Length: 156
Image (cartoon, rainbow, N blue to C red; front, side):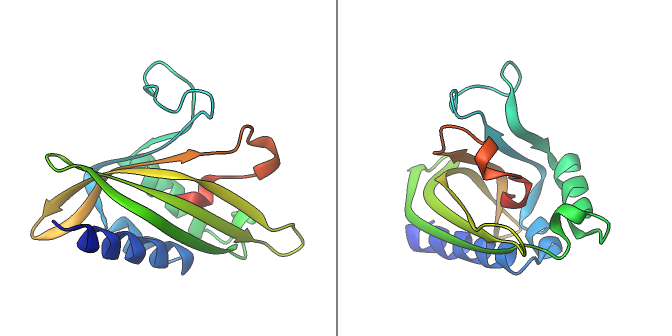
């Protein structure tokens, strides 16, 4: 697997999320995938013993996507406009395939200030049926506090 192939995959994932193609995004995940947003003060900790902002298994990820797509989810209806910029993609381990990348996510919502989320992603990627899939995804936010950032569930 080359860095360029990994970059293309991450760019496609970002495009799906920005377009709110959440079902297509779910198809990028393995059956045992996890999604985590650790606390700002302990980003290297384990969700089993530390409070995480988000620590979802695949069932909770699917549930979160279903809620985000629901017209009654007032926090995201109409959906926010987002733009994800993915940079500095690095393969940090080949077996298993672990990748890190920096991100900036800009969120625009009607009647609300624009919000910026900056940090780094840590991915655990796996090939299944010849296709790259996300087995694990962590978003480590650089902000020192989250209250001013508002909801982070849209980061997916």
